[in-house]
Image (tube, rainbow, N blue to C red):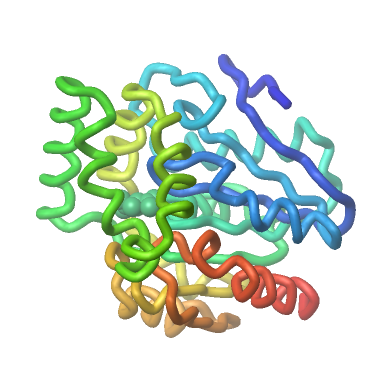
Length: 263
Ligand code: MLT
């Protein structure tokens, strides 16, 4: 379903009834990465998953896409869908960066935070230089170089080597990202704020989930969020990498359900 947001429209999925759960995907993904969550969690929740602008079926507008802009897009989606109660906001990786912006800008819309495979800190100088390189490559050659470099590290080594079907699912998802969307999101991530100081001010309950074999976000980043957010818990999923919700969907869904039931 397409929803008008500002000067563009976003593709979203809105399934089920119950406490609202907003799912924000990572880079360079789209809402299909949440398929195992949409199918199962919509039995107990109103699950709202968004294709961020320039990703999936949402068209690319001129960039860059600051995390605040993408957070405001998500808030506009909730408003447009007339979601009446605060939502559990669940962000995966870049979706986590957006969740911090969402909390900063729309705290009243948040009943709980789920921070999966993400970090509070800003990019290091080296990280910012890598973003510039990826932007230049994408502008010259399209989405392929970034996909080729990310694919082997998006999944745990075991998943990547032994689960070709899941690898294909991920290839299909990332291949839908437009070059403009990719460049604009890279620029937005590069300039995102450091949310470390925000952690202590997060009053909402928070669930932090980390894949033991994550090759993109180190465990210490999840531990730092756990130490910084007063009312938080950290769950570690074995045999899972950066796309932990796709790699271990049953465990991920069980952890999320138990968190939502505690709220
Ligand atoms: C993501 O999965 O969203 C990205 O890997 C995050 C990042 O590049 O910092």
